Image 1 (cartoon, one colour):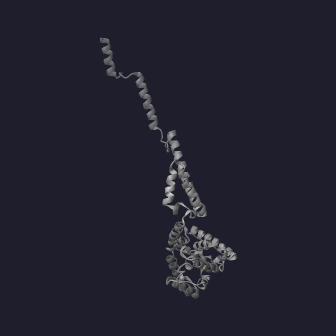
Image 2 (cartoon, one colour):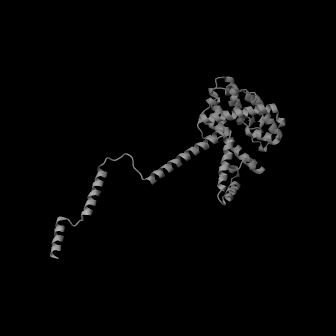
Image 3 (cartoon, helix red, strand yellow):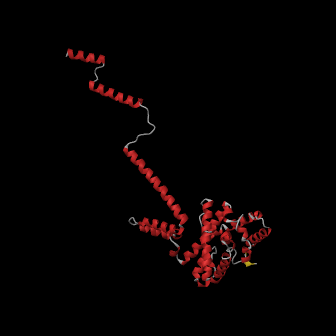
Length: 310
C-alpha cells in the first residue's frame, strides 16, 4: 500500500497521470492541427462530394431554365401562332396527374380568352373578345395621330405638310378620309421622317399595339416585326385583289377587315366589303418602299369609318 501511494504521488508531481497512449494521440492531433493551420490556405473551398453534386444540379437547373426562357421568347417572336398552340398544349400537360383535368376544365371555363383559341369560342364570346382586342389597339390611335402631327414641321415639301395637316384635322374632327387623301402622302411615308426605319421608338411602340403586337421589345426588333407583318398583308392584298372580294364569304370578309384594323363585328357585310375595297385600292397602289403608309393605314382608314365623308 505504501509503495503504491508513493508511485501515485510521484506520477501526480511529474504529470505522468496521463497514459502514454493518450499523450501520443494528443501530440499527433496537435501536429496535424499545426500542419493544417500553418499550411497556406487554398483560394477555393474544397467541398464534400455531396455538396459538389448539389452545386452541379443547381447549375444544370439554372441553365435549363435560362435556355427554356430563350426558347419561349424565340417562339413567341418568330412563330406567334404556333406559340399559342404550344402554350395551350403545355398547359394541357397539367391534366396528366390524377384529377387535375378537372382543374384544367375549370380554368378554361373561367379564362376562355386566354386559354382557348378562337375556334373554340362561342359566337357571343367571339364578339366580346374581338371587341376587347380592338379596344386595346384603338387606345393607341390618338397617340399615333399625335406623332404624325409632331413630324409635320420636319417635312421639307410644303404641299406634303399641308396634306398631312389636313388629314390629321379631318380624323380628329370625326371625318373618314378619302382614298386620295391618303395616297397623296405616299412620298411622305417612303423616307424621312415617316419611313419605318426613321420612326421614333415611341411611335414604333404605338404602331405595334395598333397591330396587336407586343411593344415590350427593343425598337429594332419592333421595326422588323412591323415590316414583316406589313409585307405579308401587302402580299395578301395583291392575291385578294386578283381573286376578287366577291369570292369571299361574309365571315372571310369580316376576318379580313378585322386583320387590317377595322372592328367588323358590329358592321354589316356590305359596308365591310366597301371598306375592304378601299383598303385594297390603297394597298395595291403602294410600292415596297411605301409600306409605312400601309402600316399607318391601319389607323387612318379604320378611324371614323361610319362618320361623315368629305
